[in-house]
Length: 615
Image (tube, rainbow, N blue to C red; front, side):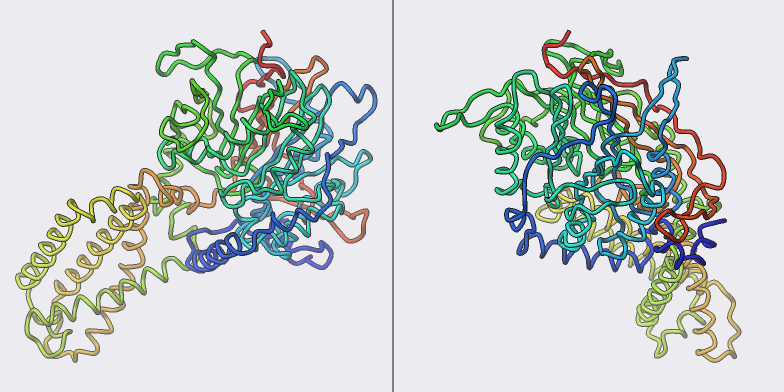
């Protein structure tokens, strides 16, 4: 049965399967804007991380499997997951499978379900609440793994969408040590540290909407992590956002907090009983994050290594890796804008202490989607014949565009009537010729040109250059003005009978304005979004399409020899057909009606050595 059919069985399921979020639908835009505003208030005046200082704290323990449990461990990492049922459940059922078989260069790999499941942020969309967590995350994951003999550990990191209710629902769900299906929660705070076999550590940082790392959190990591690190230990750090990419074109200081954590918690610590700093001998070997709903990887350039442009870095397990994988369920993001090289920390960053020389990370050739596919997918937003067109994919958008252009028509007809000296504005539309309209449009365009010319100098220019969003807003406004003038031209060009009363002409003109405005206005808005090259508006190119397919996650393996192997898995097409089976806990649960689409490796398994000095 389809998603809509599953909703007829809500009482048996215990949750309501949801559609993919339509981010540019007017209702969703308004609701999310309010939540973002409230989240900013919570972040400023009610930081839940400070309150967590009163919660229990300590290292988490992994439920190890037999036999030979002390020498290896499988770990699953998924981020940006709590969205539409089909996408979220497909990923959840794939993760829950006891074994996945994939092939790379004719070599078959048997990947075992993780003894630890790491949720890398944004466990629910669009905004956090107890009900949305139940419908968009907990219900699908409980159905995917209703029970498990080995009780894999589940840990979760909050993303910005989890923070939209001040972290209240997140803490209730993940820090009370209650099971979610066959997965067991153990963390007591919104951050965590876990000691793994083979001297590996997993760290989850809560940066609270991109802000600083709070003092109780730092004390937690200094007490439970830093003091226990030894020479040669390897650390995996999970953060909620790839701030390293933000240093390239948005905020040169965005990586500062993570770099400070690396220098002052992982690499050094305060010597016991003194104020002196000492080296721990440990190092961060892998950074994991989501937030961007694609797969991309940046690898460290080794000291003295020179790389030709467009030449990939050769595999070397000594390299530190920065991996973004936010494919757990939310809409697919583009990749064609990703920079090739990232010097970290950025040379212009405002930091008291920096590494000298700074490290350079280079983007791997393989991304998901690849750059060419990313561009092609983004363009679908402006294809009216595509199911992913802005108007088709976002309910209500056509109606809003129709209403906006009906209002603009009234405003322009009043101005046109005023310019023609008529008592009733509609008379200018009904009786004035195209020559008069040409003069009116010419004066209007001249006025716009003067405003744009003023915008090239002084304070306006500085403001325009400082904000890609503001520039996109200007472009959007100009394109909508062009559409409005086009509609006015059509209305004036119609040979209206002279004997018709004005109210009939006005009513027909509003119908024309609404119809043309819905189509042309929506298309103009889509084209203005595609014209954006950076900023929030550029992200709408993909979020506006709410792409369900193209999902994935990471499966990591700490091997008996001490290395870490990362398997980046993608699912090109999600499941849309489900059937109901009995749930051991009572009621029913949805399972795929046919075998799940097989995941595949998006690139060859990545091997990372625990020690920096490894050959």
